[in-house]
Image (cartoon, rainbow, N blue to C red; front, side):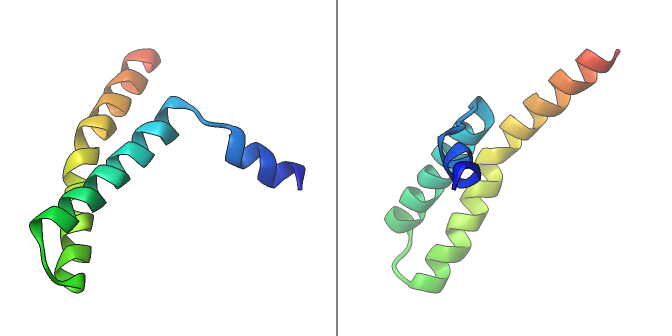
Length: 67
């Protein structure tokens, strides 16, 4: 039980950003589309588009630390 509890309570910046991106993508998908499957596709597309800047930032900071 302690492993599950620590996984749920161990929130770092990366996990918070991913949750915010996912929530924003689902919100935008519901606002933009009418159907379930189209909304699901839109949510995935929004999540990918919104996650790219965070992925690039993480990649840039890790490469800068390695140099």
